[in-house]
Length: 124
Image 1 (tube, rainbow, N blue to C red):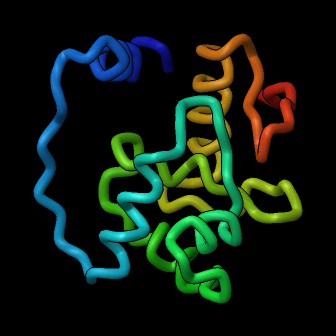
Image 2 (cartoon, rainbow, N blue to C red; image 1 turned 90 degrees about the horizontal axis):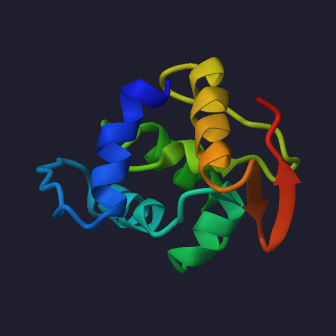
C-alpha cells in the first residue's frame, strides 16, 4: 500500500505543486467534492458533518450520493467520510479498500485518526 500511494502523497505534502483535474459533475457534486478536499490526512467526518460543512444540514443522504459519484477516490478523499454510527459505510471501490486507505493514512499520523477532535486507534 505504501509503495502505491506514498510518492503521490509525499509529493502533495511537500508542496510539489497542485494536481489539476478536470471533473464533470453537478454544481452540488462539485461543492461536495471541494469540501472533501478540506478534510486533512488522518481526519474523518460523517455524512452529516459534511452536509453541515457545505451549508445543507438536512442533505446527508444527498451528500452520500455526491460522495459516491466521486470519480477519483484517493485524490478527492471520499474515504474519509464515515457513518454517524462510526461504521465505515459504503465505498465505490469496496469497503476493504476504504479500510486500507484509512489505515495507511492513520499510519502516517502516528496510528490515529480523529473524528470531531476525538482520537481513535486505527483498526487496520
